Amino acid sequence: MHKSLIRLGLVGVGKIAQDQHIPAIRGNPRFELVATASPHGSIEGIPAHADLAAMLAAPGGDAIDAVCLCTPPGVRAGLARMAIAAGRHVMLEKPPAASLSQVEALSRAARTAQISLMATWHSRETAAADAARAWLTGRQIAAVRIVWREDIRQWHPGQDWLLAAGGFGVFDPAINAFSLLTHILDGTLEVVAADLAVPANRVAPMEAKVTMLHDGQAPVTCDLSIAHPGTPQWDITIDTDAGTLRLSEGGHRLSIDDQPQTTDADGEYARLYARFAAMIDGGASEVDHRPLMLVADAMMVGHTRALPPFEF
Image (tube, rainbow, N blue to C red; front, top):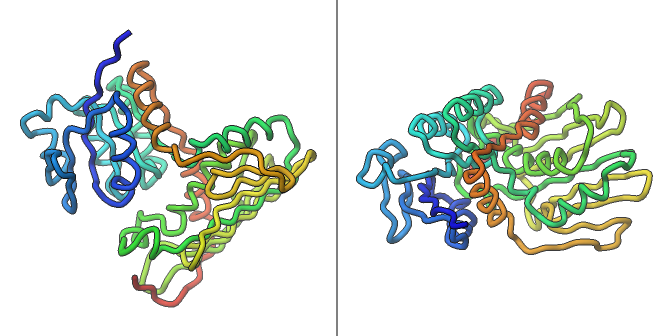
């Protein structure tokens, strides 16, 4: 059965779009990148527009089937509403929006309009994450330790929005850990305490210590930072009744009792676009709000302390 080409508009042409989305789009024959919208960048040979409204209103804009939103999260919900109202399928970079209520509103709007809405969690899209979930199923969880530390100057150079209201700060990368945790563990996760360290001249935290409970019993401790120089640490360690599982390198490497199990290359975004095409074909949506809920709860219960001013 022949499946139709999906003509895609890309909104936001920053680092994540350049590094991940554009190669994945070009590597998937189901998609054709037909337009971009960004005040700060463009792609050679692709029609460029200042914003989403201009992209949809331009000649050929009515032929766009879907849009991918790679903007900062603070403006993502409004753009998604515009695209949904225009009848376009929508892929959302993570986090899907700046608040849980925005995610719920977008989900409802997509259902009403009968379009596909995909909230992406790219860190879940690895063979190691799949294997970890399978191995953990049915096992008793004793304790979980997350260490998610990186250098904002390396991974988000000059991106002031990250430390502004709605920018998430340390939780922009740490939500990747939360997306993995909610994917590989069955049962409940509840945030019980958080220590949030915010630079004196910023709004969002650069460091955080978060404590959760899994199924109301097993402790989950999170050591999070975007002020960590050198080699990043992206590790989840889970003690169980059958041994200790570790997901490292952001979910790409799995070991059990220090014995390597599964490693794979970076194919996260290729998998996301393959699933987005399948959702559009099947008239389905996928919007998992649980990682964002953990961030929101940490911000709600957290104690804030001041760090020295930060500049890029």
